[in-house]
Length: 250
Image 1 (tube, rainbow, N blue to C red):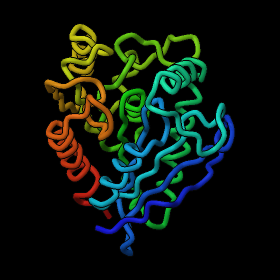
Image 2: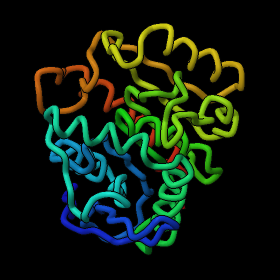
Image 3: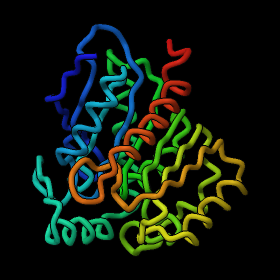
């Protein structure tokens, strides 16, 4: 499907105007909506290409600039030490409540769009995986995909580094898919097992996948990219969105 991938909207949030990149099918009609959260580097070329892939399968995809309070609109950090340092510093400078209100703003925008059916999902990568996990707590979210979500097991997201994501996991009512790399040093085995135990405890509609890959295996740039793992796990994400968002959509 041909997509339109050069649009954006500036959404008002409690913490300021947030540029949100929109990638959508060019065909007429209404499509399910997906809020997609980036890594700490914001809307990089690999993140944009991932959004284009999603949109090409029949979704309106909205990718917010997660650090809009701190950086000019359009800012992208490089995949280098300086970019990593800046992204990680902002990750724990921004209050968790601001991440949550950002998610609600994008979900509300998608629901109101004339080209969206109102059936909503969320996807996130790295830090974005954690943000997607939290966004899944909104009752209108029907399906969520988290790629190697960082810091859930440690509870260190946001200002003060004391989030409540694990405590609130029972609020996730839609179907959840979590994909992890077993060789990812950021989320070791014991951390993954803590998350799995909690999700089983609260009865989450859960798909759990561990692959033999490093952190950032999905990113099609850099030495850790694994094309085969990216293909297979992205296919799992599409399957989840198909059955939770597209099938039976009005």
